[in-house]
Every structure is written in C-alpha cells, then in structure tokens.
Length: 489
Image (cartoon, rainbow, N blue to C red; front, side, top):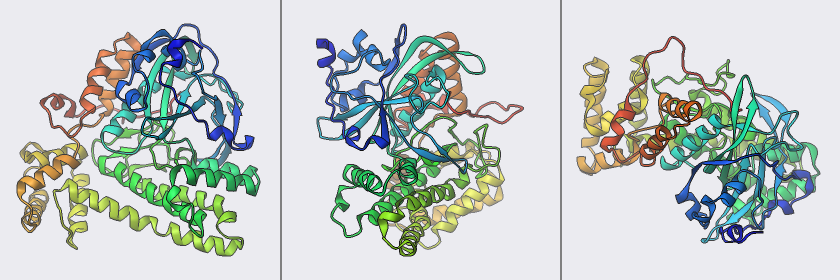
C-alpha cells in the first residue's frame, strides 16, 4: 500500500462484513483501463475525515475507479430482494460494490460504495457497469437534495473509466462513489425473511437497530419499535419530497432505506406544473409512482417490511399481524402532520389553526386548475411578486390571497418574521429538468463540465434567493412530448 493511500484518511470498520455470509458476497471491483476524475466533492470528503488533496491524485482516482482498494476496506456486494412495480424479485448489488464503512472524526459511520465497478454474483447477466450521464445525474440531484435539507445518500466522486459500455448505443462508462448512512433496505429484510433463517433475520434486525436506532435496543419489543421508527422516518422523508415537488420515480422496496435516506436517482425529477398525477419515468406507464401516489406507495412498501418482521414481532402470527397493522395505521397521520407543518412554514405560518389544511388544499387546487408552476408559485409568495405569476388576476387566486393575508395577520409574529420563515422553507431554485439535461448534454457529448459546475454552484444554496438564481428559475420551452426520465444504465 502506497503512502498516498494510507495518508488519505480512510478509517474503515466494516461491520456489515461481519454479518452472516447470507447477506453478501465478497467481491473486488473489476479494474478499468484509463480512469479520469470528473468531479470530486471536497466538502463531503472533509466531513468524512478524508484528505481531499491526497484523493485528488492519481492514487485517489484509482480508488474511485476500483483499480486500487483503500487500506482497511473489505469490498463486497450486498444481497437483497425487492418488489419492483409490485412484482417480487431476488436482486442484490448487480453493479455496486461496498468498499467499507468510513468512521468520521465525529464517530459517525458511512458506507462508501462504488456504483458501476463491474460484475458481481448478483449481476443477473448485466455487465455491472454504468454510463457517465446517469452517474453525473445522481451526483447533481443527490447533492441538490442534501442542500434542500432532505435526507439522502450523497455523491463523493465520479470518474470516467476510459471504456465504453453498450446500451441502446455506445456510451462512455463511469463510476460513482456513493456515501450513505447505510445501504440497508426494506428489500434486505425481504431477502432475509424469504431465504434466510429466523436467526439470520434476527441478526440483521439487531444490526439495523444498533446502527440506526440504538435508543430502542433495550425496549421490550424492539422489533415492533424498529418497525415504528422506520415508519416515522419514511413518513417524514416522503413529506419532504412532496413539499419540494420531488418525484422519485422508482419507489421499489429495494429503493426504500431503513435509515430514512433517499436512495437511487435513476428516473427521478422535480415537478414544474403542479399536478398530482405527474409521472416522468418512461417505464411507469400506469402512474404507480406518480407524485400524488408517493405516500400510498410509501406505506405499501412499509407493509412489506412489516411482513418480513412478523416472526420477530410476536411468536403468534395473528398477534404479530395485529401489532404490525396498528403501527402501519399511524403512517397516514404522521405524513399528514409532517406535510401540513411543512406547508405552514412555506406559507409563513408559525401557529396552528383548524382551517390551515383547507387553506393549503385550496391553493394546491388553484395551482392544479390553472397549471401553475409549483416552485415559482411559492417563490413569488415569498418575495411578494405574485404580479409576475400567471395566477395574478384570477378571481379564485385573488380570494385565496386575501384569506392567506388575513391568516398571517392573526398571528403574533411580524410580517418580516413570516417572510423569513418562508425564505427558509421555499427553495428559490430547484434542479429543473431542462437545466439538468443541459448540463448532462454538455458534459457527455462535448466534454464541457462548466455547465454542470455552474448548476451545482447555484443549487448548493437553494434558499439564498441570490441574483445568480434568476436564470435557473425559468421554465422550459414547450415541447411536443412530455419530459421523460429513464432508469440509470
């Protein structure tokens, strides 16, 4: 091991590798020909305790390409299952390899995973590789989500492999280094319940509790409490998605984390015109994962987690089902509470009134009826520039605006305080789909990364309301066909 690598700040402790072999396969990345660093996340590297200078060397690029294994790493591919569009499938990391778990200077633990480093035992005939465009897309969106204050996996680096991959056409290959609180999924528990022993399932559950919910380790029925805590995290996460108009696009159970982080940025996108039926994913032909359906899918996925845990929750199957159903029934109330609290903040409301839900619903109905832009409507309310909206002068919006103003007048906080709350709660800018595509086209087709760098800079502080944001708030030009996204390939 060279001095540069040992001085890079890696501090691995690989607890997942100490679980039963049922849950993973040891697997090293497949080396690539001529890797080239495309982007490196210096602030994230620093927070992880890594030496950002050492990792921006040839040795650092070699690590992110899978050509060198950092000191202390224990590369493996994780096994899991999942319901994909409602159909159960045995899966696993077909094109991802977990290098290990980095312990930060503050004692936090994060998975360091390479996405696209070659075949694994779970590749199911695939090449285990990834294309540059989707990896840059994940970098842009995941870092934007982090800046928006939404729990998410993050992106440390993207390297080009110097090799082409074949999909519909020939594409430049790339590898993303993903950072996560863990890669434990609902599908991990489905895998354990379906193909492992009860003791292996228990060991996995104990591991997840120790890693993510240590405060419940001593509870009488910690497995029921575990289910409850995951429900709470997901109710909060999905409410945050809804509040910014984010559409995940592929809410399969293997894409729902136990930690409550957003994971997998394949066909995701942000909504422009407000419409609960909005779908972007090319493969979601029935609207299963539409914007307005995300809370319903969330609880459906959590029911699959509950099913996987039944044998641990209670020895009597009927009693276990009853206990699990009681916890699942809490999701709707938790989600509505989180969403309404978030909407109050977006409207500058500090206190609660019983008519607030109706006020929010009325605004959303008006936006849907008149095809208003979701983000820009709240931005205009925040900056008192509703005269610039297409909604301006429309009678039902005018009436709603009077009701909103009266509602704000009834609270003791000042208008300035209300406006500041709105500025902190309504992003001035989001990763508009056409801007993301513009950045990816420049990067992939022309090797010009400056467009992406400017976009990332603007998205890094979405609540700043800076002059630099203005050009990124504009809507895309009309197109004959609706915008579509595709699963990362």
